[in-house]
Length: 338
Ligand SMILES: [Zn+2]
Image (cartoon, rainbow, N blue to C red; front, side, top):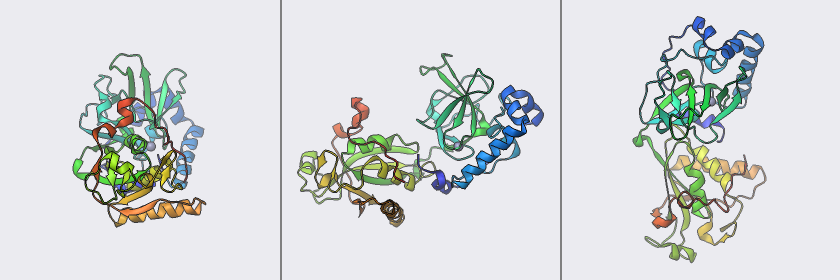
């Protein structure tokens, strides 16, 4: 994911009311207690936090009790957290940096007293050997916040994994379709662009289609002639509380080559042009700023900024193409450019 600065726009969320005592925490986990007790470990955690703050990652302020778990790898008492018995539709995010970590659909009742998930969003959670030499620690991949531990082979769900997470390490963003916004990008064959954008946490839905041309309700065959004016495009419906337009836009510029004109890899013609179809002035300004940033890095960006026009969904057999076929994108791959 792109830097998290834009997530600051998600706004503050309610802070958990915590009733943890340091005395209990000292007993809760040998590893956590050892880390908390050692001034070197505590200093390292604070230094790491400062380093991240300096590279513009937005970090929420932590209470001392939250810091005890998130920075010093403590463990909350079982059955004490606000999420162990919490089942609602939405997304669990990192308490410290707001990165989306777990979907509510991955949560299950383990009876262990801590929130349990059988999957994290791809790349959202990092694993590390625990200081106890036995368990596997899990951390927020973006900010390094301590989340808890992961256990395999317990047989709770078909995925056979239990991410055992402290409630304190999490916040919850309830599902709210009314909050959703739309973005439209064209970057060559829409199969690959859709595949990569659909995987972003916070993206609620994607549709491939045609936009920016003259012909009403065009067919794929018509668009392929290159004479309808349409571009193969992807409409993204996203939750701005979980992913910002800027983050989506940055990703768009990294999953296709924005310097290619009227083509993308082996696909040639104006229907494969690189374009951002902005929905409003704010989106136009964000895209223009990113294009300027890429040009400042020496890229001869060909991406056009076009006002959003009628979006014609493509034929059903084009939708979620790679998901349905199990194939892999042939010309879209993420390349860091910012
Ligand atoms: Zn984080």
